[in-house]
Length: 444
Ligand code: NDP
Ligand code: 2IT
Image (tube, rainbow, N blue to C red; front, side, top):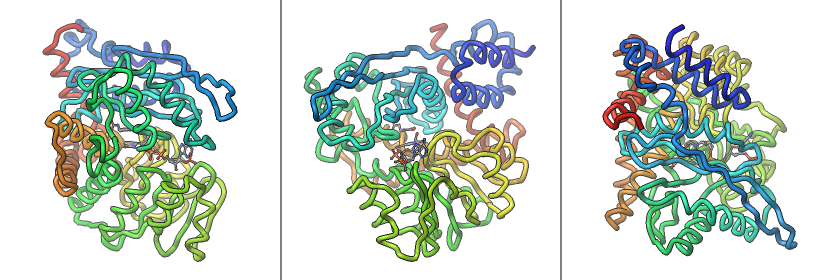
């Protein structure tokens, strides 16, 4: 058996109850075969792949908190510090009832290669909790965040591990966590990103993941003689990534006709009203059922369904495995040209293969959504030099990072004989740098 297959088998056996982690590992290891096979004996000797798939450190802790009635609740907190070969651990914190160690490991593993692709010096990590922020008061959110940080603060720091937002963690949660970190450690330092602008946050970080997704999509289309002008796009999700993806897609001339949340989805034939969406989701923290009050011509449907709408570009921006093989068949039958992932691993393995077999330009999340963490790294730079850059400056850097990233994965795919396969390109290009750093630092 080849070394890659041996390690895939070993990971499958040891982590059989972590399907998302296995999915992420399978995809990466399968892609990097050309690098491994060119030097298999040395890879085996140094156990490179065993070290790659085993996190450097996993932290699991109790998070007790009091609700507004004084009743006690206990959640589980996680931080997986996966790989620090190229920089301090960097990655978001997910607050969602579905969080478990397998989800955090999949996200942390993906983050290693994503962060490498940004070209910036950040290693891979991820964390979160099975806490459900839905329906909680501001004070309950605050008490949860403070309790979570009371434990997490022992393991993070501006040069060690720098968490940020993800599903369920936005500006409000980062603020409460930062306040507690500062209080406990007596350090005003950039140990979290996605901070508010008044206390060290970066302009354009809020917009960065969605904007970056569209900068990359625009470059992909441009390189294939197309543009976003006049194209129809469908977006899933209605959170941070989706909102700013829709905003930038519209600025670049596309019409975005859908968005969704975990209850249902909206079809707006005139194009999503971003101001209304922001008010519903960012201000009121309400459900998409409210959208129709702003746009009487739109439709609201319960359940899932955005992928049934005919489009040129599909941008999944909600969560993992939200686009399956049946959705892929519908999108292909409807003539989709490109699928670029705003979320982490939103497309199932079968759906990904189907897009690739049918000539759809498919860019995986670890490349397409890297603008968020890249801008987090720019926030770290600004914190280190105790300066803040203008919106235009950060946005211009983000745009050039995403354009370079596209060419980087495109070139890597060509170099290894997989032209047009951006999954292979992203995994190969991301892995090359991590491998070089791991080899240079000895067996650690
Ligand atoms: P938000 O919490 O702001 O929004 C998440 C959106 O997805 C909401 O509309 C939510 O609906 C929906 N959603 C979440 N979980 C599910 C689910 N299990 N089933 C159906 N819908 C769901 O998160 P973000 O926008 O920040 O994150 C979205 C995706 O982008 C995630 O995969 C995240 O890992 C990834 N990402 C985020 C980055 C960032 O900077 N924030 C950077 C790179 C990637 P509801 O409100 O009803 O739950
Ligand atoms: O998945 C991701 O890249 C994020 N949630 C953002 C991480 C970060 O550190 O900004």
